[in-house]
Image (tube, rainbow, N blue to C red; front, side, top):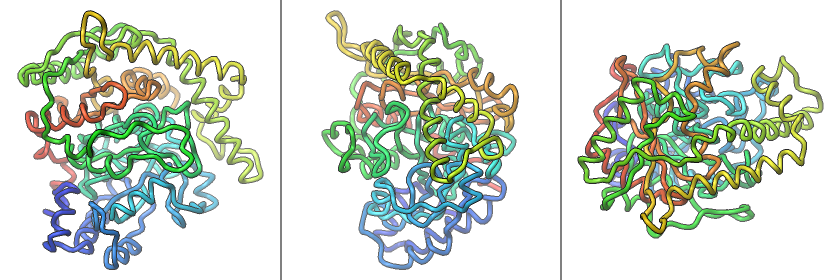
Length: 480
């Protein structure tokens, strides 16, 4: 059974399809692993083990992942009749359950996945460590004294601990890529509009949020993206369809890519972290050996620090609106006994943002995004860049507690330097587990593609997976 869990989801599905293992066996193995290690990492907060066993023993949709176990992040991806608390105490206290499936949940089900539980997330997903007051801290399988990242930290911990091979995740400022980086996983943030938020949401945070997954292999990431991508009725916008299934990009020829290397700290001083520099240097050396053109170059607009304050105002306004929605739902005001201090501060900031200011912030962001994206586009004198390479965060995973408390906000600004920009621009970006710190902690390297070019990122990621394999790197928790 342990060997089943060492496989990626694609291999698990192949065994089930060939009759060499049953869905009940694979799901049972995942549940047994969860019961063995979850108390140490606090990844799954809403287990549905008995339901999953029954579903795995009955007829399942004949999708590409028939019988493969999955976890859903407890933020978005609602599942009818299951808890959906979004990291909050007030929804936990009333025992709130989702009244319907999201479109994304329906797509996972049609693919044949069996959901074994929902995973921990920070309150409203507004920070990059998973330590909510509602459910306590998720802990990193590589070292349980360290953060899993956030906001998809529970899902990342479950995948790194070999409970499941795929975990649902979503990303509004780095929340797929940062947990992937800190837990040694593949984390691809799709392009804006690639995955539907329906039926209840059209967009959030000015269209900066998007759903995806965390996995241990590039082919799983590509195959899941094929499953979850596409227009749903009423979506306000959708990304253009790929020329062929993303899974066919795995192993395909990359061509000779022009890759810019972020090497000038500019307004992003975290690049001076010695471990970050080591991760980028190793990646650059490998990229050159693979025949790619690597240049020290990055968009000039990336150094415009003004974007951070404007994006904060947009997120704060949305947070204020979210809290007001729940106050109407509960019929009372929410205060410090209900909402964590960081989100109360965001609500206060949001209350101060007028409608005129909000529209101005969005307009500035659109203009800034155009300046950013120009770097990837062909010019009269050059072909433009195919990919930008950066650290995922500045340095190794932080210890539990470092991003909370009085100094937590300041610490967050020290390491959250490279991801949120590409939520604003809507570009695809992936974190790959290409580096481990001197203390043995995973550190991701981020690759950012031109708009809607997930295909380029998947081809490059698969090439790097072969050249710098991470498959045999397993978290100590799994080896115990």
